[in-house]
Figure 1 (cartoon, helix red, strand yellow):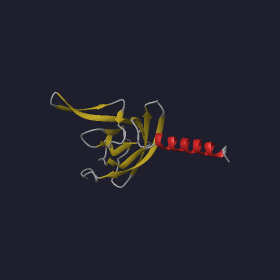
Figure 2 (cartoon, helix red, strand yellow):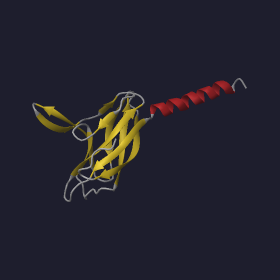
Figure 3 (spheres, one colour):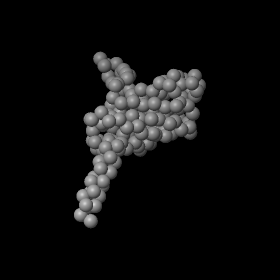
Figure 4 (tube, helix red, strand yellow):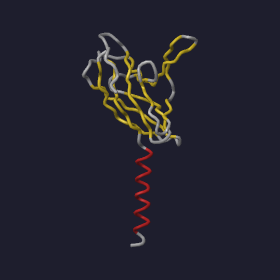
Amino acid sequence: MKLRTPLLAALLGAALLATASAQVAVKDPWVRATVAQQKATGAFMQLTAAKDTRLVAVSTTLTPMAEVHEMAMDNNVMKMRQIPALDLPAGKAVELKPGGYHLMLMDLKQQVKAGDTVPLTLVFEDKAGKRESVEVKAEVRALGAPAKH
């Protein structure tokens, strides 16, 4: 009986560590609908990591090109650019929203319509360099639709 107790404690501890190290909460994922012939759109959501983590990549079956982007003022001009990673501080919600950090889905082959669902794969990396993929289903919202709270 004494041999089982330390083994049980070790197994429980390992299970807790694995669960804690792998968790990024994704809240309210959505994609902006497009008009015919439009070649790009944005994906938005709220991300909260249990520990310091970074969003390092995104992919989707909808398009061959998806990137993490930011919009920021540069010499009084709003500019959008790809960033290599988005830091997610432990316990702090990071909002991906129009006009700020967001995911760009480019080289669209078809129109994205309100009511559709877009599959996204988000890749996160912890401080040790361990990567984890999280599958997300994002609702497509009409062009003028506000973000839900």
